[in-house]
Each structure stands twice: as structure tokens, then as C-alpha cells.
Length: 382
Image (cartoon, rainbow, N blue to C red; front, top):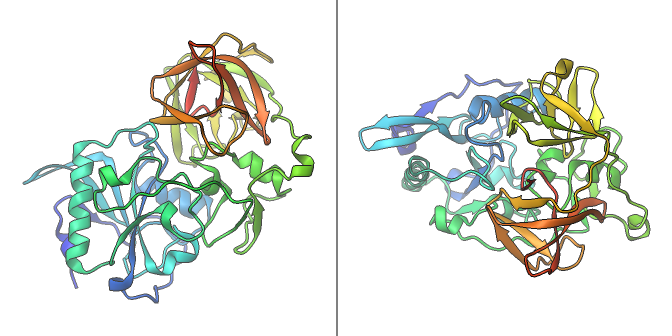
């Protein structure tokens, strides 16, 4: 049968046309009893690969999944002219009857819908907002799903900072609740990866998870495996910041930051000329590990100039590039004291290590001392 959502003029059907490896199994839950599960991709919406084809390539060729993780993918970078005006394109990627990998143990009753973009820094444009509303209305009309939830509202994911913006204001049909503190121990669910667990969360990184859990092969997580989400108390005092190999600056107009050390991996963000790059490892193929599972190319030294092995941060200004960044009145990662918004900034005193992850110790114009994340996708040094 043909559903109402398939008749939306901005929708294209690419079922069976995107990269795949085998096939997903059919879900046991009836469509009327399913939940519409909303995600955003945490890849900047304008970058190459921030679309259905890019997600399919990553999910299949890097993660080894049968196909893309979502049934429906909204692509803000592809605008369609419809009789009703401009709309973001919708890709029908997997049949809604299939149990795809996107919310772990809830996959059987959750229909995955992804809005491409990293909405810590991206803004939702009108064409995308209208497409979201029209798609949701069509799914309701079709009787597909009986409610809407965002990723963090599913069992086992209440700690996740996804989605990072208030869906209640953007997707008026979703009830948004605050994200809770991260658990001490997390149980791996179907489809989980270290990147997916850590990406978009300022409280820990991929490297943290590897160290805290003594993981030898990050690609071999097992469903049911227990992951420690915090530094064990007996070893917390011994943890040090990851060793910095060297620091450099981008010398070309722009380079993509990718989720792996080759162009086969999707772009997660972009660095511009003059941006600072902290390098933790140089790969033999010329790619640089810049932390938290992110990599940039520097083949033959073409893109990044090595500046120095160590650099003083004192006196530098750091400002938020995300919509909101938490700050703390003591070095910690839970119970934020407040938030500062995009464009606001403070003066760096030094960089410190808190529970194994780096923070900036900063002061404001009144001399008050606070601690913030040093993640380069959330803040930047000026």
C-alpha cells in the first residue's frame, strides 16, 4: 500500500538504492503501536556526506550494519521547490516495517527519523521546519506510530545530550524533558558504537571510554557489555590529559573533520584557515588524530602547519560556538552552575583535567572563576 507520507512532494524513495550489506529483519511490533523516534545527525548540515547517502556509507562500510540506521532522513542541504513552497528533501531510506539500528533495545517499536545537522551550532531553517511538521502530520494520518520521542527519551538513553536543543519549541508535538546525569555504568545496546555513545556529549570522549574500560578493539562492542562512564574513584587521581603530540594551525581555506582517518568516513564538522589543531597522533597515511574520534587530513603537510609542541593558554579568550555551553563553579561534569550562549566568552587561566577529560579554567569580567569544556566543536579559542 501507499501511505500519505509517500505522497509528500519533497520525498524521494531510495529504498534498495542506498549502500547495504544484507538486510534488516522485520519488526514484530505493529506500526500503529510504534513510536516515532527523532534524531539529529551531529554532522554539520551543509557538509558533504551530511545526507542519506553519507549516512548509509558510514553505517554500512564503517559500522558494518545492514543499511542506514533510519527509515526516513530529512536533508536540509537539499531544498525542493514544491507547490506549497520550498521544502527540505525527505529520503525514504528503509521500509518502515524493518527494525533498523538507532535506539538500541527499543529498535523493534521505534521508527527512526533523522534530521541531518548538528544543532549545537546549526540553525533549523524554515524549509526544514515545515518539512518536519508535514512529515509528522502525514505519519499521524497514516496511523504510523502512536507518539513521538527524541533519542534521549528511550530506555537506557536518558543521559544522552541528544537532542541538544529544545524539541518542544521546534517539533511542537514532542515533549522535551531535561537530560539526566550520566550513569556510572552503561549497558551496550543493539547498534551502539563508541562514537555514537560519546559524540555530542561534553562530559566524556571516545578516548575516555577506551581508557576507562581498557578497550583493546573499539570496533568490537558487544550487546550487553558494561561500560564505565566515569573514572573509577581509585584511579581518578592518576588520570592525565591525553598526550599532545603537537599543536598546529589550518593553512588552507577549510578542511573537513571526519569520523575516521580517511575520506571514506563522513564529515562531522569543518575547520577554517587559522583554526588551531591539537594533534594526538599522526597516522602513516598522513591523517591526524585530533581527539574524540575526529581526524583531519594532512597528507604531505598540505593542510596543517605545525606550530609548537606546547603553548600557553593563559590570557586567551574562549567563546561558545554551540547554542549553549555548560559552566561549573568547581571542576566537575555534573550539576552545571549555568550556561553561556553562542558568542559569549571568558578569559582562559589554564587547562585542567577533570575525571580524565580536559576543561578550561576561566574567569569572567568580574573575576569569577568557572570551568567549561574544551571540546573544539563546542568552544573555540580566539
